[in-house]
Length: 313
Image: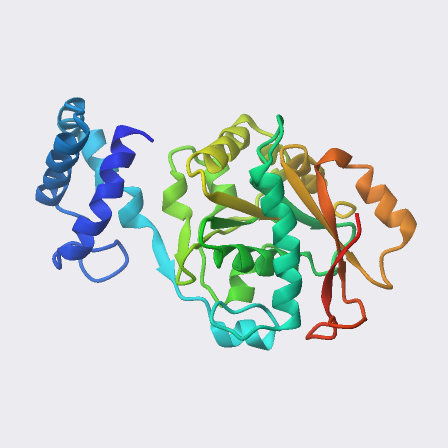
């Protein structure tokens, strides 16, 4: 974590305690320099990093602190009623077949993280499908919410279906800039486009502005650096990517090459064996965490959309 980021993390609680300083976009304004200087002084004493004070003498450093991550990240309220209408997991909901099914799915994901092997970070998890309309976004959201209820993990849900981003709408959120904007404009920092949610450990990175060169941006060095930051900055973080369908968009294959785990959603009665094999041939088989059989029927699966279960590998 950089020196400025450490100061930013400290600014969060100080800012909330100061009624005259607030998050941009809410009542009030950005933290004033007195608040920043107090934060700098405190972190300098705690960490023994004398160069922090020198940095704040620079106008650029002062500007970065004024839009520090802890101060600029919005907190959005997820629409629980909308989740229920869509038969999704709610953090305060009763036990249900769908919640139990996603508990089983996440156990495999978390076990792979705990026993990770050399290669792409196991905490980068992509949820995809062969075709559109198989329920991958539904599964990505439910998997993220289920993991967010864990005691030992936090979740970053990334709307990586950048041509047709839909996660904010499904959660009842109003999101602005996101992943594409980060990759296009390197002056934008990750924390500026992240959205905290009121589901305690769930944070959202929207897809952002649709871009005609999305595939190239996802294959860029900027994306690799962003993935490294996502994977390494917080040890307890699981990053869930809602990916485009593998047979419908070239972005999916590019993204898959950088993932540690891939969850393939298969709709019962729709996806043919040939289509599934074609989709699987486009990704590294060693990274496949499992298949999620979607909209199937059977004991314990009749719920909402028809049920969701973890199919055998």
